[in-house]
Length: 433
Ligand SMILES: [Zn+2]
Image (cartoon, rainbow, N blue to C red; front, side):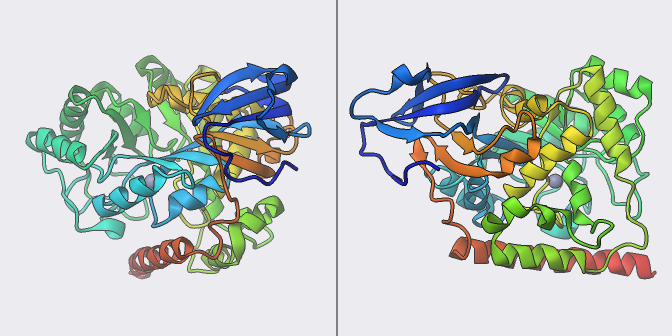
């Protein structure tokens, strides 16, 4: 589709013409974008093209701001995988400091998604997600809040993750922080300038936390929100990362894993991850699958009430893959009632606004040249986002085939295998009791 040049000579400009531009909020037909020194320098028409520019003819494709996945857990190399799917920023919601350091360094380069991280999240001793990540520092009460937040800041955290449950989560129940402890953590985090994202899985847990001042829910509740609860979330001004892709951890009626049915994503997913996802659909599964129509309906009603909905995948949950699953999440959101344009906004400008990322998420002069060129009209057919033709990270054009088969891929899969084995055997023990 576009020319093959990977590295324009430094100091030169790239001008893309013959494109439709989604600027983070609305679509403009027949546009052009000029990039220089890692930034977007102009947005306009074909007149932007100057002698000496590298010219990319977008051939009627659509350019989006690089997408933001607002809920991931890092794997080694995952920032390199995400970017090949047009995801140029990932917000990590719990990873251990060594991996955060490694991934952040990788993400600072031109060939990987930029990483923002909570580092370790705040949870009670033995609480979720001890199964995956123990040992790590716990929070025993409000008196730990100040030091816990300071330690995360020292690790480079850009936001705080807190984990809270109201004790009605099946099938397993773990110890949880109490509300006063979450309140102390939120206070300490806000003093340190960090936004707070809260893991909850029930409507009651969400409502319990509203008085604490949390900023974002890391999931939509899995049980039915009442109208009063939705109004309380609206009044508190809390945004919701939907993570509807969690449903992709279960095979569909055809027995196949949903992500593998997305044929346009397949080449970029590659054989090793495709095999892994396939095996995840053949692993031990609970006797009854959760009812995912409930969280989807919660998203529909929250959106109708005016709650900001954000795109987040919770990769690498089973069946959910860094970068690739953002395209599935967009489809889940449209199925839940968002317009395609609104879903695209939820993956770009809206997330940037909620998380204070003023330098990205939009196509506007002066912002980072993090861009995705897709073939088609994703404002009409949301699945067109899958046809990624080119990605620029801070003005540098990516090698979209750089991740599949790489050492990064092997390292990521190795860590995932190890975590999965631990989790599956624990669940199995619980069900067999
Ligand atoms: Zn998560």
